[in-house]
Length: 112
Image (cartoon, rainbow, N blue to C red):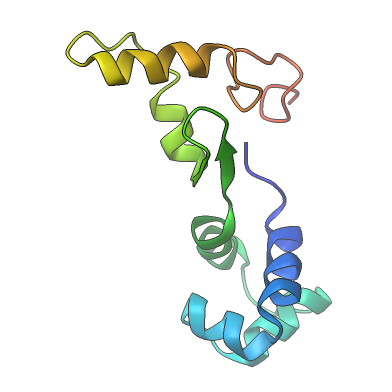
């Protein structure tokens, strides 16, 4: 479900308007954001990628019409809820959702 973290970072900078503002949101230096965007970050980018994805990767839930994280989306794709009618309605909507990795075999996570 996750988009490429570098694309997410570039979109965040374009949306927010400055590298410094994005750096503050991520809790890193402006220089780190600039180096990441340039592909010249000297260290391991796994930690930075995780920060970017956690902060900026959002999906529009067609059922609730709200932005949710991919993890939130995955949570409702699992077992059938039996304790809440609202959760059951959400689960049913998730079964046909294009964001559901189980319902869409061509989704990027399943394409690997």
